[in-house]
Image (cartoon, rainbow, N blue to C red):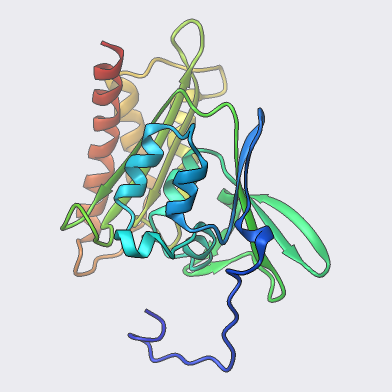
Length: 252
């Protein structure tokens, strides 16, 4: 896009696909670590214990030829607010491993995006890997709303994850969105409405309404040819209700 639509040109282009360290994949009892330059389709080959939501997300990510080349590192580094990679990884509490000649550092993905198409990456840094902690959430869903189901840019993308304690109260909640602000984001205010200072609550219609109210106060989308700001907020709210409905279906 930078070249085709904005006519940008660079004096030097550097390929990192031959750097073996950036194409590594490992899984331990504590986490899954994905090299930033490992193509998406190769992640699926390595991660044979991946949850179904990852495979569903992967099928909605661009097209098969692009998935043979596209990487998580590239998708996240562009910092697009409508990129499909960030919402799911935010819902999974992913971290970023950044590397430079000065050493390495690890930051939460939720802290990686600073403003529209801007990140915390220093000029001499690159993304080395993405790490997803274990245990994975009990219930996770990814939603992509676009004009076409396959091979299209999202109008709104969302990923939601939830865990419950032994009493059936919400122990952890993650609501992550793309296309509703200048950056991909976890809506912390929405998460707090179902956890709160005094512990978790039930995931029910009342909780959905509280989350939807928080979304209405927090989200700040733009209007463009894919959808108005009002439409994007309405879609985000409807996906919260869908998450509850799918949880009920799964628990039935």
